[in-house]
Image (cartoon, rainbow, N blue to C red; front, side):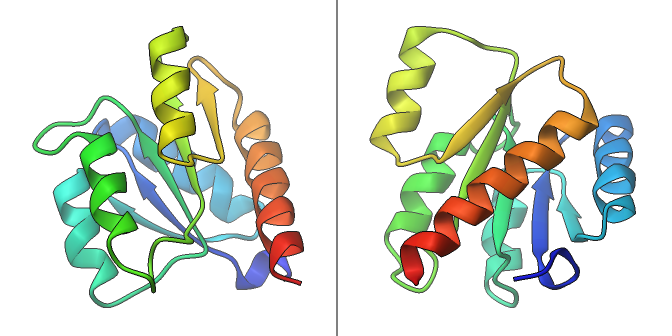
Length: 131
């Protein structure tokens, strides 16, 4: 799968960070859709299935872990890889990510290049398993 074919859903409530990340990801060739909270993800997934979801963990309205649990209920959606963005680097958070089969996460602050590298690694691993 080439980058030009990869659709990423970026979930970030901070509008400045959301636009910065979108700009950087699009600049490297990804197709990028954005929403500002986890509840909007549920609506988005009714019409579009992205190749990967990048989601900030500290979200209003719906907890990102609740969102991941909801997605697990749908066979068509439960294989979408996730990357969580977080300011937390605690063991409890890491354990919760493993329980929900979250492929990866980045601890803030990070460079956009690090996010691109993480996305490429997660997608490579995800699609290698399918072959």
